[in-house]
Amino acid sequence: MSANASKDRPGGGMDFLRSMPRRWVTVYIPVLCFVLVLLFPFYWMAVTSLKPNNELLSREGNPFWIVGPTLAHFQKLLFHTGYPAWLWNTVVVSVVSTGISLVLSVLAAYAIERLRFQGAKPAGGAIFLAYLVPPSILFIPLAAIVVKLGLFDSRMALILTYPTFLIPFGTWLLMGYFRSIPYELEECALIDGASRWQILVKIVLPLAVPGLISAGIFAFTLSWNEFIYALTFISSSESKTVPVGVVTELVEGDVYHWGPLMAGALLGSLPVAFAYSFFVEHYVSGLTGAIKE
Image (cartoon, one colour):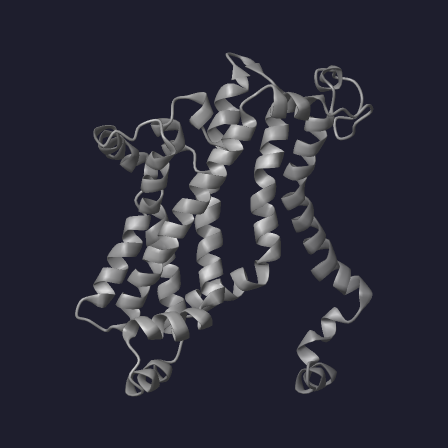
């Protein structure tokens, strides 16, 4: 009787969370473990990048702590390697390719979802299936095209090839978000004499800001961390991006410069982490709007 009565009360189904031991077992401990697993790579990169070489190579002491922290690895990375140029190349390529992909994804998603032409649904499915093609298959024919266009070993090669995998997912994500916007708003605007372009710019896009942020963050993250295309299309050190430059320039044969390597990985991961932390609410709502449809 008491169990049934607790279920009948408003919120009775959550009574098991009200006691402190149960909250620790069902909420706090799982969340703590999840956070530790997620943050441990950043902690390990920070610890390794601040350790002097004698501590890195020593088998004594605590590997999870620093006895004598140093900034020598950061100094070597920033002033004795091409890391600033790699970082600038990564920013330029990521921002430009994300902007191009976002504009084209908006136009494609709006046309498929709102113009209601014949074959719109198969076209949307085909665009998403294009995203499922792995880059390891596409980089060989794309390399031949890049060489013929005279773009090899330039940032433009990456800017033009990254949208091949950014646009399909961005289009699919925005299709789901545009689908959640009521059609009545567009119908009223059409009755008032607005054009399709005015409807897109003044009505649909302001309502789809969370979806745009989600697609933008996703495209920026993929562009920032992309490795295969950057490794294939770029050969000179000054034109490399951070993921390729850190791996190829800071590893000399079988010698791994772990301090600069971890410092470069830490600095390279911070912009993406900051982007997610500032726009996490819009990112989640954008994904929710796309997936629920």
